[in-house]
Image: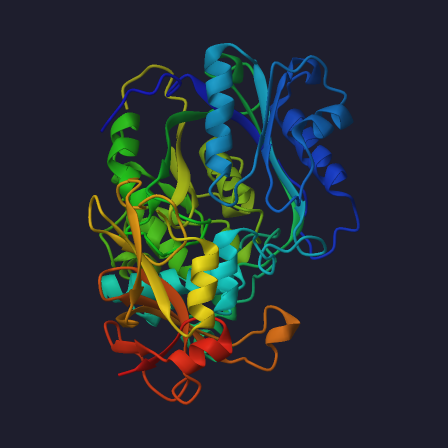
Amino acid sequence: MVRRVSYHGKVAVAAAAMTPLSRDSGRTVLSLAAEACRGAIEAAGIDKAEVNGVAAFSLYDDSVAAESVAGALGLRDLGFVMDFNQGGQSPAFMVMQAALALDAGLADAVLVYRALNGRSGVRVGRAAARGVGAELRHAAGLIAYPQVTALWARRYMIETGATELDMAAAAINARVQAARNPRALRRHPLDLDGYFASPMVADPYRAVDCTVEVDGACALLVTRLDRARDLRLKPAVLAGSGWRTHSFDLDMASALTYDAPSRNFAWHMKDAFWGGAGYRPEDADVASLYDCFSGVLLQNMEGMGLCGLGEAGEYLRRKARGGKGAVVNPSGGLLAEGYLHGMNVVAEAVWQVQGEAGPTQVEDCEVAVTCTGGHMTGSALLLARDFAGRAR
Amino acid sequence: MSLSPEDVRQATAAGAIRVARCAGCGAEQAMPASTCFACGGLGLEARAHDGRGRLYAWTRTHVAFDPKYEAEVPYTVLLVALDGGARVYGRLVPAQDGARDLAPGAPVALDPEATRAKGCPVFALR
């Protein structure tokens, strides 16, 4: 069902900033978060006194509270705070939360951040979840996320006919794009021989099919569009957005009751998403999509409507041969840049639309679609250049 | 009525599988719950299951994500669709693990002795 969303076209991301990413920051999560937030404030050219909202998410207690970061920044009189407790499905949704607050008039400038020592501290890839779902999974030796998502990948392959070659296309594309990204942790080239030589982790996933955990932080500054127009950078207008929980049972990565794993949350959301934005998938110049694992990128490309089910691998191979269509993950995505739980693929989409992406800039990027999440639940944004009232 | 975590533990310890069937919509589930996952109904009826089903998905794990799994890797985790539709996580009997090609829909049957020994459902390809 297509609904008109109140804040579409009225809110923008004014700036995005990221700390360097590493395997051992040697710093507190609070200091990383504050640095990223300061970076976004400075990039936007906004007075810190105007920032009156902070939203963040964390998983397995791996981060710091939004109000702690506000305190570290010396912010006063916040009208909006949000501490959300989900994983990689959260980043786009946190921007939506900021948009709700801005549109409602509860705040005027909202920081959205993700900060963690995800390699030297709490490692999501090895974290053991709690609860009944975890008990069932652990009894079977299904204890870590790479294994759980590998089950989804296998089911995706079964339902669509996709193969390891399609997984390889995702992993290879990430390296091709990351070669231009000085921030990326994995930049060395990868070809098919290299792909198949990579050691198996949990089949079908090899080491190169898995994102790399990092320490770091990323922050966005979200304001109403009219305010963003007066700030330093070109606004990345929030033209579309959506959250979808298609279904859920015991915990985050359960495939026990999901009806068709090849159709992830995005697939079930895409009609409402594009209809609510007034755009089509073919309008996107850049797709910066959550890719914690290779199969997740394929599922998100298909789920967001860039191509049909099972066709994402061929889409990437065609792009590599010079074919048309959105550039997919110009930063190298989570696979090559590093795992900031998806906030970094959102930041890349912001920079692309603003023309601030630097070495990874796609020429004339007017529209960027980004999504965060992989399987049962997730969120997405459509960011567009400020067309200032003229017809697209 | 419901299927409790203790029901599931006891069934496993007895080398068996217990599922819950929804009196309202007929959906079956092997995971503990007090409501039907499909319709939200309260009429779950727990029953013994004969442990027969088909492979829905699998993954062969090559990395020990916890030190206590060092001795076990590589091992294959199964997601089995039991006859009647309930899905359950499990393992393959050791003699078949890594020794047989797996295909979607391949018929499997619960191995009661291996299930008792492992503490989770263990299946053999039929």
